[in-house]
Image (tube, rainbow, N blue to C red; front, top):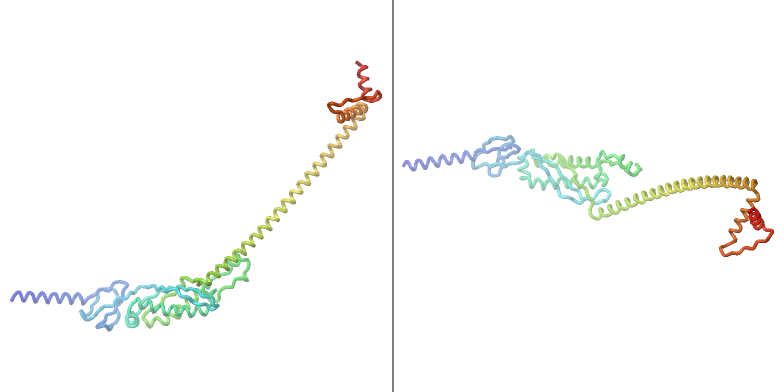
Length: 313
């Protein structure tokens, strides 16, 4: 009898412990919960962290994240208003603000991401279709001053009418009108990447290469013109220096010739006979070689000079 009683008490205590254990739950910080009974929500959502109570075995707890969550969409091929096909990659931040409605309309975060993909991607497509490519890739505060200084022309650059950040804000406003019915608050939407499709990208690359070649040819032409200008100036300066040197050399040579002529004249005037004799010797030196015999007449100047020197001896 005592054994049966003890066994009964153990069963009662075990059942009570299990009941107490299943009747309480702890809601962690950053989480929120909805209590369901046979699959149907019961009461208001639990949003404050701490120890909570529920009916054991009958009620279940569905936990949801209360923190900010990130949605990353798949890249989509979208045509712009100016018929340019681009790939758009978007991201968004969102959170669950009404867990009860979220449980009833969505169920879990995986389905919520799929739902956001439909809402945001559709809104992005609509707004991209209504704007030109230049509005997608340039921000609203984009200034043409820097590019104007590079291209030397401000007329070639038109500032955007809307801009990328305003379009993303328009996407946020449009999508935020839909998400509250699912218990979701959309915080922001951003364009993380904008790229051309392959065929358009190749054409853009070809155009960029052609533009760079044109700029390079223009730079080379400017360099060749500058080179020709420098070489012309150097050649002109060289000719001026050479001409000045030749003029100075001619003047010096003329002065030297004049001085030499003056000396010759003075010497000839002082000793005319010796000068004539020297000229005769220079003439004989020119016309007489090593094996040449010279026959002098008795009346030649050389014969008379040699004869007079012989008489002096």
